[in-house]
Image (cartoon, rainbow, N blue to C red; front, side):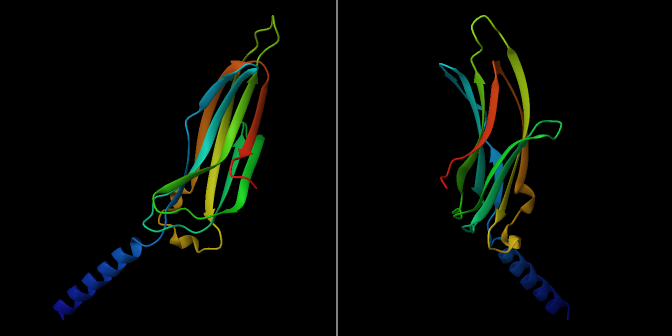
Length: 162
């Protein structure tokens, strides 16, 4: 009887291990701030990164980026209702957040410090979410502080076309 129980537990552990390695692992993250000086000011960009680190290709997915101020007021949002699934160990950068500091008028030196909270969330589209091996890394936030001269324009931008 003892041998049967040990064998049954070994079979169950083996089946559980096999089940745990089937699926995908979508996760979100953010690039570092990319700053570019232009004739009219500067452009600062942060891209949303969606990656699949699971052992199987993932299904189509939904992604949304929401940007707020620290007080919770919304700056912008952008997303896709679905994008093609990601293969094993691949990533995509479907959305970006851009802040543009315009060059101040001659004789004015307006120094501006702006803070933003970026939130990205990825969800499988048309698939059982339990196939995702780690649901905790589907949502991610990042706070950025940018400094520049002049007026500020902020926008969320889709990068994958419509």
